[in-house]
Image 1 (spheres, rainbow, N blue to C red):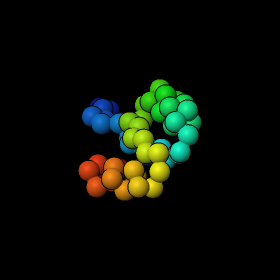
Image 2 (cartoon, rainbow, N blue to C red):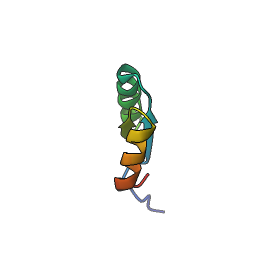
Image 3 (cartoon, rainbow, N blue to C red):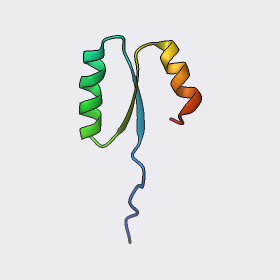
Image 4 (cartoon, rainbow, N blue to C red):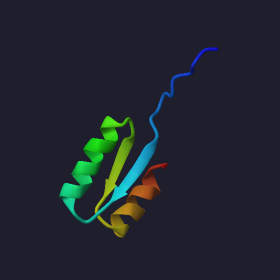
Length: 54
């Protein structure tokens, strides 16, 4: 049986008003193989979701 490589990593969104926390989570999740999108608040999240598929 051949394993099929996933051409695109799973995506996650991190929403936090603290830039240090966002960066920490981005670095950790990226190392774990995720594609990470960041937003600092609900307004930024809404803007992100209008242009990105999660």
